Amino acid sequence: MKIAVCIKQVPTREWQPRLTDDRRWVRDTDISYEMNEPDAYALEEALRLKEKHGGEVVVISAGPARVQQVIREALARGADRAIHVQDDALGVADAWAGALAVAAAVKDEGFDIVLTGLQSDDQGHGQFGPVLAERLGMPHSTIIMEVQIADGRLRAKRELEGGWFQYVTMPLPALLTIQSGINQLRYATLKGIMAAKKKDIRVAAPAAPVASRTRVVSLSLPQKSKQTAMIGGTPQEAARELVRRLREEARAL
Amino acid sequence: MILVVAEQKDGRLNRASWETVAAAQALAAGTAPITVAVFGHDVAGAAADLAAADVAAVWAVSHEALASYTPDAYVTAVADVVAQLQPTYVCLPHTYQTRDFAPVLAARLDRALVTDITGLVRRDGAVLFTRPMFQGKLVAEVAADGPAPHLLSWQIGAFRADAAARGAGAPVTTRAAGIDPAAFRQQAEPPFQEAKAAVDLSQAERIVAVGRGIKAQEHVALAEKLAQAFGAELAASRPICDNGWLPMERQIGSSGQTVAPKLYVAIGISGAIQHLVGMKGSRTIVAINKDADAPIFEVADYGIQGDLFELAPAIIAELGAS
Image 1 (cartoon, rainbow over the protein chains, first blue to last red):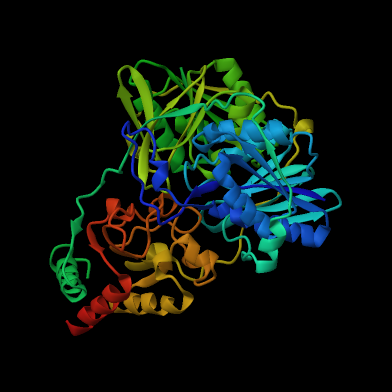
Image 2: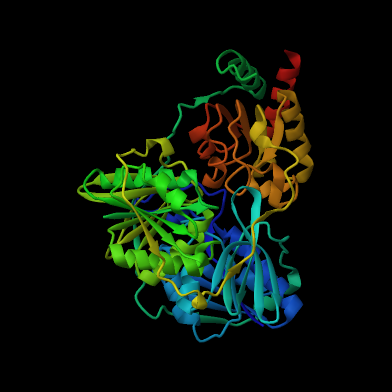
């Protein structure tokens, strides 16, 4: 089975954003990067599907040269080869532009199944997977917590709101967006890291100019919806003041 | 004109549909007529409810293949209505169902989709949409480019359902959906719950919720002690349940339970939108986080920036002492 997994390189969770002078984007010189968390779960699920059904896992990422960091990491964890759709504009492009660039670069690969995370921890459009499915002519389902494949058909457990689930079946090839927590992640071994150095990364340029459909006009820190009383002091002082105010002011105790 | 895609389950509208009507009314600002369409098999009742809204028209779009949701069915049915009405905007509630089909709908229509919208601003004659980015660390004002219609999905709680203006009774028309079920590729099985939640957190008076900041499973015991000291139920953000440190039934947020207790104490929770939608209705919110810029402080009444491993024992001691 030919399994594809699309991953995105995103700023680490600890990163504190600083804006560019025009306040339209973040200063990328300040960023350290990691693999988008839901994509890491999608990669793990892809590796498990290969262990069960055989075949190969192809990791795909769109972005500037820097995204080879997460491509190498995916290869070290066990992906067999990679496709890097490389263009500086893809670093800030929206999900629409990214999906179109990837679709054009992989349309002749003939994947049986394509997995990706349900959304990215940076822009968070939650559109890349379904748009890619449409452009590849595949059926899809989103926010998946379990993947079963038998007799050329896919049965996936889709998460609904408030603790509800539903199984959805569809023919292969198909695309699924994976929810965090679907599995337990593996980490790269030293052997895997060494092996990754010899694995193939095909670099493809976008087939058409990268054009987003959504445009960030400005970025800002969130406005507080409440007047937050920040309590300072030593831990003991802060604890005393908090408990006092919860009791006397908020009457919550 | 503006098209609103309402969402129903078993013939009943969800609250998010009314919130989206309110959003569409704010977007229209009285200058564009609004049509609300509800899709399903037996949607006459839902359409009659929607007719109470101050809108120009309600469409009940019916087909037995729309009885249970699948993305192919909804994409085709909504695309057909868009083709008939030629709206400027299509407004949808940012539910799991919309997240499943709206991107495909946008791709098929070849139009822009802005997701997860929390508000609307008009600047220099342009309409911009606010949405969180970078896990809520920043808010973006976003413009949709390209020809109309622009598709917009509105975050839960962005507008209040009771803010949707009521009218004199909008005309309801029933239409057969223009769809061909033979072309649908997905089949959906009935929804189910994994296990009946043993704890109903929505009934709890006080909740202590723990997030990534707790760092390791062995520290969850500290959060449990804090919950006991407050006389509170223990809950968690999604990553804690993903790791198996607490059962899924204790998860607060869009994929877990929605709560509004008297007191909500969030420790080591940064406050991604998926968590905030599940708890921001709480009466008093306390946030303890090492990061002063964590989005959780935006909704907190009381905040302490600091090390939870020092603060939690101090609070436990303080609660025990008095």
